[in-house]
Image 1: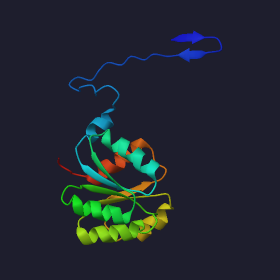
Image 2: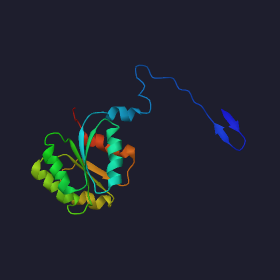
Image 3: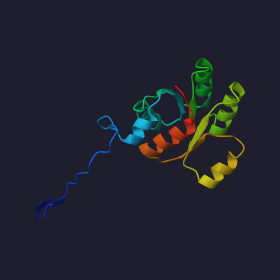
Image 4: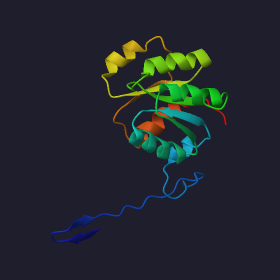
Length: 161
């Protein structure tokens, strides 16, 4: 323990390592190491900053990210990358085609598309609206990097690279 008047105290705690458990790579937690896989994720959001933040978070976990600014572009990219896209992260509120319309159009291309809806709207309203849509999950804005990681991991389920 180190103490300095007016500066506070610093405590150092040393714990023994667990036998047989390798340390995660520098800068990563065990949760992040578990999530590492190479899924292809289509991120659909009209907000450039949101797309960029999500892309950085997913790419740091080893995912390949394809970005779309809206529903029409998402459908075109989904067609172009048929069979490659494992998950779609879809914003609910976008100009031209909203999230519901985009999901419907994507389901015309592939009934089994795995989609995760991102929104800032009230949880009860959104869950009710998408009750029968068989979504892979919801991500409530604003969300942290850890919430993104956890939700994407759950949405990918038993994904195998």
